[in-house]
Image (spheres, rainbow, N blue to C red):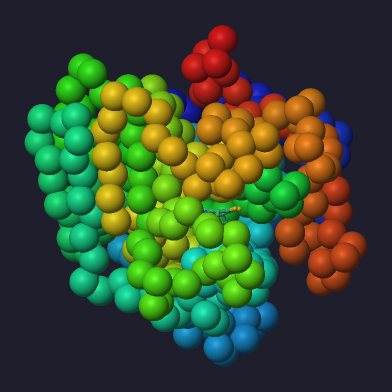
Length: 329
Ligand code: MTE
């Protein structure tokens, strides 16, 4: 991990100058701590929220505190303030539990203990990981990433987890593995989907996919936590994908199965509406969704009125071009 940083694309925009100067001074302070090797204690600071702003019902959905998490110094500055958790954890997409943003109470039905993630296909060492493996087998780090939904809203989220590459090194894909599929939990009794869904014959389970080079990219991450604790169910407990240069739908939640494949897998939204949701789905401001522009994005929680959330320009690859642009050259 280097301590010399090239300017990020979001530093070049004047729109980023916000009244959160105090917040950013705190972030600089955290970086200094990290540089001095005292990183682990900084997590609680970076994840700190205003607890009183959170309703008690919501607080009950939060996971357990995660220890031994090192803030990754390369991913502490996302160019915007971290979204307050009372917004991030109540404004979700998880269609298994309904078709609105307000699924967080319903998602509490998800059974997450015990849990197994089965990894197979074109690998030398097929594996089954249990709940303890997910938080103990791979060193956990915190990464503050920008998050951009295809619906043109955006957040900044402090994830905790491990690079996808760590899991790849554990299972060792064979040379013919070209794609990877990630399957979410599905049980028609527990996760029936939105009421209107049965009329559309929705292609459950939710499956997402990456090219193997995308999965090996430094940014590709498995999150097992958020805001200093294990993932709340509404965010895809106990493990979900995070690929911050792509639209949020590429980040499958509550993963139970990972398959290394020779061919591109069929994926959920791409199967439903291929002209609207591409397999690649990189954040590209110049490429409009067929029904709306992607040139700007709404900042979730930028004030207390969702109808008046501030808009800011979208950045190519969500600002992560230095890591991923060469994958698409
Ligand atoms: N994963 C599953 N299994 N089901 C879903 O409906 N929605 C996706 C993605 N992962 C979804 C999913 C979409 S559209 C988005 S924007 C993000 O989850 C939202 O993540 P968040 O609710 O944690 O912010």
